Length: 364
Image 1 (cartoon, rainbow, N blue to C red):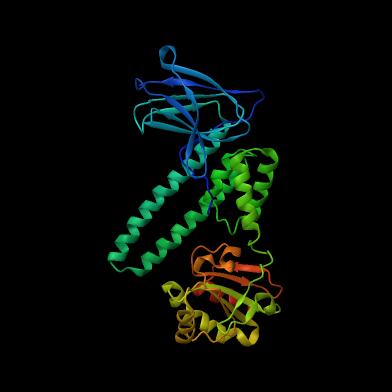
Image 2 (cartoon, rainbow, N blue to C red; image 1 turned 45 degrees about the vertical axis):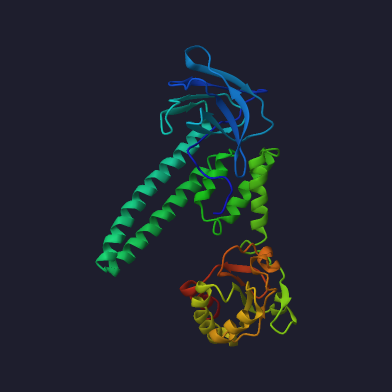
């Protein structure tokens, strides 16, 4: 999934009553003349919001007043950082201090248990993935196709098991901000109903939280193009300059195909789309091609060379600035959306065998 908050070695806090929260702890090896800085995680940066000072025995204790739960980090002397989710509970942070990968521990956080569980799951999966990758490379050198296919199937099975376990853990997190980071390991398309419901719950629980507001906004955008949603209208000119609208194809199954003459993967997929169009066009299948080309001559020539015989070709020749690309949140091509007879999205980014299987389900 495509979300703005990355999962680092995140540590977090659960909610309790109280006006401010106390950040306390000990630095084993402080760097003289330097500071401990509390920084807030923004979309593309960490902004300093407070400075903490050591007292006796290299300990610190500092009260922080926050408007809402959010993602933060303690930056120890620009050497070691500890990522945090701060809400309303006091947290103890003990660190080495002078070593980027040094010792640290967090106390006082139920949410940390959630994130440690997720991190442990990920470490286990990554270890298995590395082993499978090594075996795959060895099989590839031996040109052992059967073993390679078996290893790919094993990887897919392990990935599915991981996602199921992550979902299980997410359901125990309630409205913790740890949810936002954990869902990065889910399949956004297939798990969208779950993710959508989580966004609604988080927004209700943390209406002023900046990360929650940003997360809910992202989900709102995805909701418009989720499986089952009504496909947005596209009205653009064809090569003759005549406007064509996607909605005119209602009553048929339609593949909305974003492509371009300059896109090699698109051109490689075109023969497959042509074959499937010829196979199912008489049964009610249509293709609505949206080109992200810049030059009309390139667009028209590619249509002719690739034999794209369907009549529904449109483009505003604006590259990725195309109005249709913006509406459909397309930032890479090829990109496809399969629509049912009512114009609702029933498949996304189906290509090759996946598209063939889906069309066979619908027509055969």
